[in-house]
Image 1 (cartoon, rainbow, N blue to C red):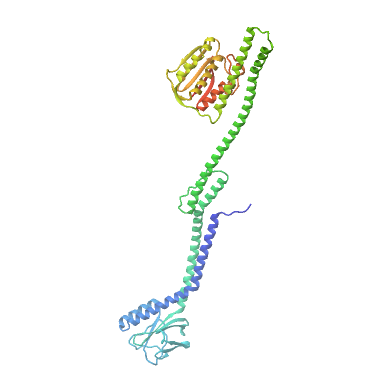
Image 2 (image 1 turned 135 degrees about the horizontal axis):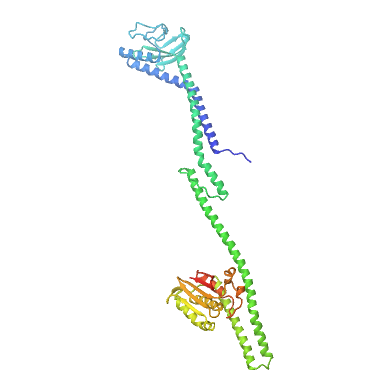
Length: 485
């Protein structure tokens, strides 16, 4: 595995190197250029003194004050010489001449050219002043000197100990080295602190993106900086939210696809079962029709009663096959996605009364007692033809399975229609399966009225189209079927 290093340490190292390099460059500049800079500033100060002295030279008192102040400040030697052609001078430290001209140094020279010890020649013809340095014979020290031509032709000789300048520069450099070392230590601490602060959001973003790559969207960037890192964090938050939604939608779509596949497989199986059931349901009436038809065509000696019986059986079975085919067509139409309901307002109470009147002869035949618990007018919005078909199938189902002299109770409350019939219970394991085409409970196989075997399937399809609910449950002495719009 490749070894990794924290970005905070990398940033700390980069900043530390930058600080070290910059401070080192500063020390080198100080080392090699401080002396020249310091000497340049000293020369400027000496020249400024000479100019001030020249400007005040006519005022002996003021000139004396200027000289005293400069000597005290710089520990310098100031000598003033007249403009005679020939003169001698010498150098004495920490002293200056009186301006009355009585005190003069010893030396050799003329109006423009002066010869100093050690063979140094001074030429004032160019700038009016000249700097020079030499060693003093008495104290064996290096001196920085300036000869400046004053107003009226007199000259001032200014000397400073040059070694003092060097020592001051060396001390300043040493002090700077100490300061730089302290600053370097402080800078390292600050660099480490700042690098951690700078890299903390980057580390958090790295952790976030790693989790996102693992499809974990639980973490979000909470930084409040207004820089590029803050903008990156907001973009990653947006990306994370979009990916989470997309993944959620993809999972939902995948689950729905699985359900659709299962539903299609279930539908395929149901179709196979439906075909088998249709074949089974049609086989008996077809066989009876064929058998009695052959009996009529081949047996010429049948009396009128036999022929009427044969024709009655053929007609009854034909009606049964016709009802089966019609119900199959209805179920196919209802389950077809393109089918649309014709929704209108209607009176459900009147619809129930009409259906009960229509099948009053069946109710009377079994001496069934019917109880109604409903309002006189119940207004609902539905497809009248399909709703009538559903209520009819449930009432016929109740009549079929109600015992002799039994009870049917129809109750309507809040768009919920409940139809109770006395009789045998439906096994709990079959309560959901009875809504499947051609399914009949093993205990309820004895069909007395007749039917196609898909009446409850049609009810289920109609109520589903109305986006309602349906169900069945056992009561103490019977079964209740219900639906609601």
